[in-house]
Length: 223
Ligand SMILES: [Zn+2]
Ligand SMILES: [Zn+2]
Image 1 (cartoon, rainbow, N blue to C red):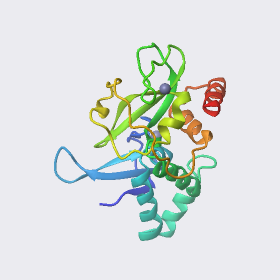
Image 2: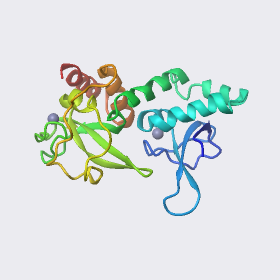
Image 3: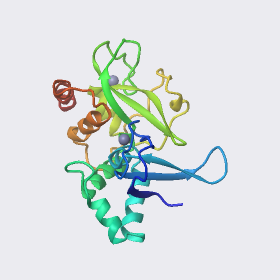
């Protein structure tokens, strides 16, 4: 049971990370997991960057397996061909390492304006005011990314740089806004660059305009 990075053999699979289709012959990352509904394994497919962002551990394993264990020349050529401009294997590896160093970073699922003032920030517990920018979070569980609330853009340092071993009770259900995630006791690894966060927000919310992103960038940097 080994994770894979390979050219897509069909254009049917949808990426688990962003929900978009993975085109035939495009490079894809497959996380192989036990099938919870029966015997055998199942493979969850991702765009390489979506995998690096949201499933850094198996993604790094897949890179190692592809490049070292059975890295034929053809495989190496495929993996060294950027899926998008600048998306080289070294860059993808860096993106996944950010997620290994900061365990909450892979929860980022994009950004948007709060449609109401009802949701509370998972970091500071204060309401997120209608029309202000918020970061959406998901929690991975058994092959699915479950919505698990929001944080203020301005709370990103406290929340995303916190040490985190796993979901707190009820977290995956996503509706528990009364509870606060564990405070940041130790910040592992290097402090995160706001650009690392902005890139993920832009990736998972492709509808954001350059003006939107500039506004969010300003809030990230002044946090
Ligand atoms: Zn994707
Ligand atoms: Zn907050």
